[in-house]
Image (cartoon, rainbow, N blue to C red; front, side, top):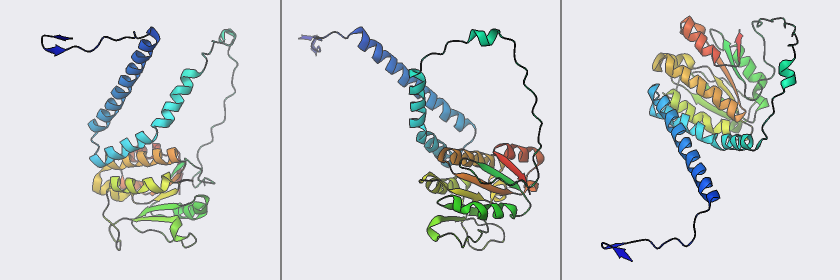
Length: 260
């Protein structure tokens, strides 16, 4: 049948059940909320001045975790609701003895560089960090080195080493790479089975050429990446290259700071 020249769709022979309608409504609402959340996150990153390369790295890292987050959400929805333990709430609190505070010991060695860990070594020139690198290199299937002067790792087979040589003052060869480009090259070795031990001693170069904010964002990305892939991050950094406030911001990104 047509009305005013328009063909009307045939009447539905089956009415939608309330259960189907409710399912479709809830699914559409969840889909819309997911889109809103993703777009808000992209807007936040954009407003912080990220470059296109950095945005790509952030988005790819986020996409890689979607399946994990969906599974956690599914489990949380299926978990039975917990009843409040009123007895525990009404009982007087049990005093907890204060634990003695043990200040960090300068030169303390993390043994080993556990998966997911990020360590910053404060030193004027790479020395203690190189010792830690050589001590822990065989704990991971591969080592990724980011350095103006890449150290020799003769004990490791060539296929276990990923060397990203940076071009800097006094360097022979190397490439002029941005922090975003280095991040792109670190994705593959860290995301392979078993992860990687990532060694970096070129943060001062990034701070000089790209600024403090970009360098700190790059550090946060590396810390998140090794945590997600069960890799490890070892950074040698000269605190004199930044002022005290910015050095403090940098150090807070790491799970451990060593004063060499």
